[in-house]
Image (cartoon, rainbow, N blue to C red; front, side, top):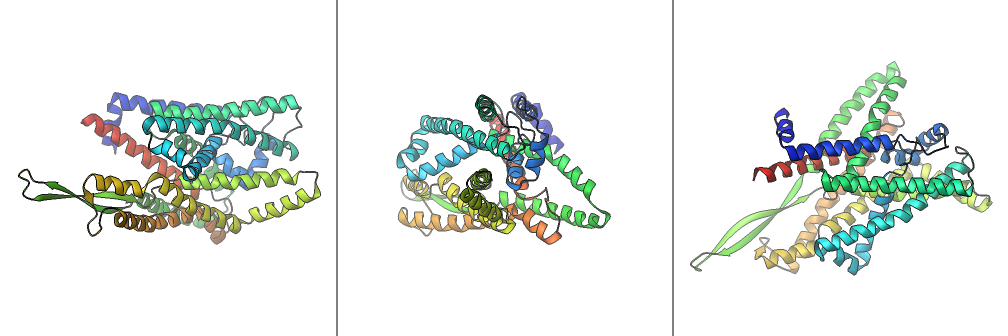
Length: 420
């Protein structure tokens, strides 16, 4: 391990990239501690910590929401915009062609549309959260000028975080948005662990030890499944130099169990936040009908098992969706046919496409169920142990492991490239 770290930092270009990433992540932590002018975050912090869905949003912003900071939205609007644009690739053949068939120029244009969409979403989310805080009494009433000013500040902070994430992609190493979310989760982890241990009774110590062992086992399982893959054998036929016979060579296409990574979990959380924000806003409405509807929705969403069920279903759905977006079986089968390759036992064309689709469906199903169960781990452990607000495991664990593994792979790729 130490030899690996030494080899990484011995290469000047990789060392500079890592230092740059650490600097940007430190900058995001500083920004998350800068509060919006003229607003006290003490009441906001208590309100956020006592609200389930706001606590989840606060986790993604690295505590920026509880401190009512200028980056209180984090990269959430950009993630939501990514969800919408990815869905549009399925609905619009033109957008799909722009993303996949027009090369690098098409991908840049597609990413530009995602950035443009992030701004109106930031404005809407900033207005919704400010209105929620005002109507809930945790923030004093604002004039129209103050409301407009704060919305602009919050939106600018969100755009800044998006830009910092893209700067990491360009000049650093790893996925910028994922690293920013990862940094926010890790930054709050020590405080949460100390708080949990401080409030634990003597009788609960064996239970916490059992939870720690469970955490290590789940961590091993997450790493194992994240790296697991199903090799799909492919045979390439080449003619001998004298054209008298064919020479066959074998290779394989790796189909990972969690090909979509942690993206389905982030997408599912983002989608679940909209009805909760809407319900919280309607609860403070002057209309009795709106209040009754909001009360029903809040009670429905506050039910842990109902929330967990929809969370699980959305994770499974987004896993299949994102896998189909990132791995196009029709294009892969077509590329194999053009290169003279085939899957043993299956004719090129429709038969190969159907076989690849069946294998991918089975592999993705296992990965989707695993992601859903690990994401529900805190809920399950809370029901079994009776300890509420378990801070480790679940979404945080999946994001942390996926980001670290992806970062190590990209560093390895940089090292391998320089060796050659």
